[in-house]
Length: 277
Image (cartoon, rainbow, N blue to C red; front, top):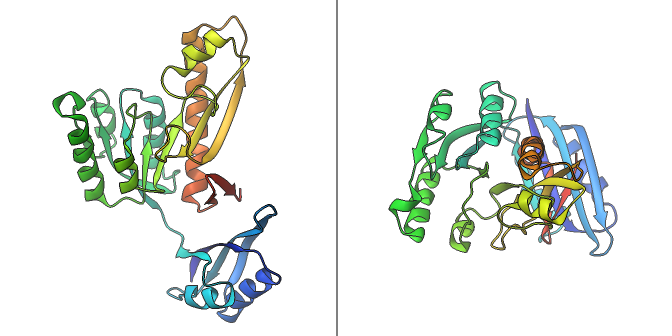
């Protein structure tokens, strides 16, 4: 027996849930969990189901016939996702991922870490994970990206996680891993896009700071948002104290987002996400 996840995104119509669960029943699958949502403005239907049944059964073709030929359908056995992590100098998000990976709490396998600085090499190698250091100052920008791409592609990951990777990615880079890159941004987007958000927040006198995990697209910090959280602050906090408080948020928000993505609970639709938590 095998656990499967089914994700369907299509135009809404009457009887979809009945048709879909009926097909699962036909193949003797037991539905363990199911959730549906209809976005009324666009009349779009989303459904995620977990089911257990005989290993190796493929039902996508039949689902396409009974639901819609244009439906986006994912049907796959549940498994640990293969990921490559990109980092720079900050250790807090990467360290959390390494620990979760070591103790099997990530629902993923970190295949390698790639960085444009050597600062985190010793940390990563303590966990017996390959570390690739590519000094961005030794290359032209486009050449550096191409070398990073080559390394990532050699591992064939399902996702690329930016754990405080402080480099703006080109559209060409993003296109190579479209829909696969997840970033943790150190502010409550859409506020304070770009660099030094805690300094920006301090100068603006904000009362709330936040962190945002999102898919990366070709527009800086404007990809579909997966998870966010905030912490209340006041005028007594210095930029350094805001940064430290933000780091705690970044770790928890990234962890939550990755859990949702790796458990196949996230749909991307019109630059936003539908999440079945």
